[in-house]
Length: 380
Ligand code: GMT
Image (cartoon, rainbow, N blue to C red):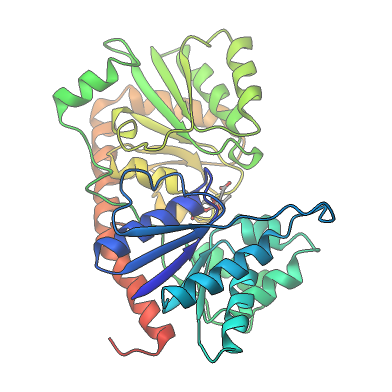
């Protein structure tokens, strides 16, 4: 198949999923065309057989708000026509599903059918879609899509409950390439850990876009409590609006030399396996991709019991779950787990097992392929 993919190319889970899906589809023999305002950040280095088409928005002085949605729709229609795309797959409803709708309409006038699929990722429904000014157009984008998927049961239910769309929503969970996100051998892991920690120190990791919904201040507070009991380091991967607040808390608590703010990394698969625990104390996660990537690397999570997280992490088996804001509870659980090597080992093993048996790319890719065929009306 020839598939056009649109996503937010910047740091964030939906862009990561879209990019990894494109990479897997290309590896499976499909032709993939990314259409976005910049190259998706995880594409670098693994982009063989994948084309990228940049959307540039001309900034005419009259445009106080340059119309990205229209430029995107135009580019989608062009790419679909020039490269004979079979379908478009857009990630994140707003504005991508609306641009895809416009592209489909533009081509329909030229007797060309271009179906589009929308994958809902979370904040497009829970934050953006429920902002009253965006609700009707988000519902329109969902209803006009030729197929809609959501990345967890939670998100599917939430979308039905809030939008009452006249369209089926299929759940296709997020996935991870279990060969890329994989544990390291003992020697390699120890050498890698020495870059950040001394012998006997534990390594905790947090990975996000540092938006308020991620509660990065809680990450530092949890670590500060833990560091009173256990020699440890915290790796903070990513960047975003709450980074300076997190840095300030680390300084105020006197732990700044134990917390490494690493910024946005193009690839996290070399860092995650070095860690002992991932902290994900988010206000909301429709899925929690960072936790899945860590699980595939044999790293359990301390997380919040929100959204789709309980579908991914089984409390007490592949991680621990707590109410939002329960910094004391999460810190105590982290201390307990890191002080009990047998329990930690069992959890790490269970985390990898869950990632491998339920969320590997090899398991999820066929679900997308089947969905594409269904939308195209092709019998497999
Ligand atoms: O979480 C964010 O701030 C960004 C958002 C995105 O679009 O990148 O993440 C959502 O999609 C991810 C990939 O499907 C999920 O793993 C995240 O749980 C989800 N975030 C929220 O629901 C808050």
